[in-house]
Image (cartoon, rainbow, N blue to C red; front, side, top):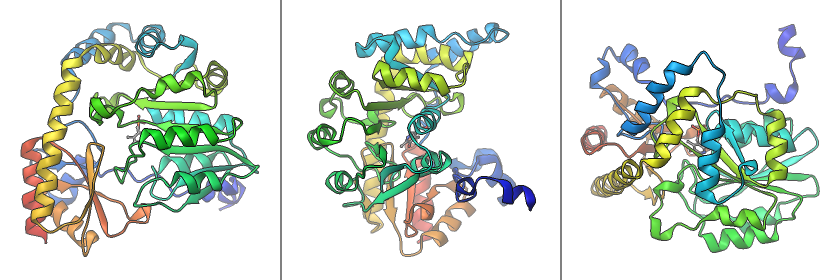
Length: 362
Ligand SMILES: *Cc1c(COP(=O)(O)O)cnc(C)c1O
């Protein structure tokens, strides 16, 4: 009790992140074998990771006695984006980077702006830094950038934007986003989280990294956890001005990315075929699931990611019935959406299992 009382009040106010239920946990709970379970709860790539990245990670095992060397990955990312290496910061997953930015710019007495239904890590990182989160009401489940701009106060130091957003899958058109960035005061940092960027149709994708040249207050984060299928290796990156990158590097743990992840990421960037295959599988799987949801009469939010969120009369009950059938999806009551479930797009077979289990649960 005394220890609890002595902890920081703003830490005590945090409700912990709720991850997707692990496969082994459901197996124990339901007495199922691991093979009987389909997990579509954490936006993981059903294809796993690129075989080339896997080979690179295995080869890097030979070097694990050495501290990690991040030069090759930073160089590869700088090359791909046309930015200098001094503009690249690596993270132990992009979550790590969100936390690092928060620690650089937030503290008690400061505020950060985020959208209702935005990714859960934004309030977590904000509160863990002792700052206050200003939550701006969503518009059609997505970011209302005009309202977010209006919410900026003199003590606001940071704005969080997920594009596409998780768990809603909403997407702010680039023209709107750019207009917003141009009116945000230059002394307010904007974090643009593009974890699902690679799932956008290439023809619709704008190279936001080009905006960094005119916007020193912009931080773009991306990850190897989603389309690259490396969630368990924990690696992501931030692209930003040299000024912000330098500040982030001051609080970043010196060796926050491990050898295996670094080597795998370099190889993954070069495996365009794997990314293209993953993209195509997601497109067809999205159509399969959306058609299935329509057939079953479930409303869904059109999604730009590798998941889709859908509405039910009793989401908690349906979730329980899905679990009994060995299908793990994500309840999002903690986001203030108790009537909704989020399902990750899996392989064709996994999607079919999910739809059959859903039908049996309704
Ligand atoms: C999955 C996700 C991330 C990435 O998390 P990692 O730490 O890179 O695994 C970041 N932002 C959003 C919105 C996500 O959904």
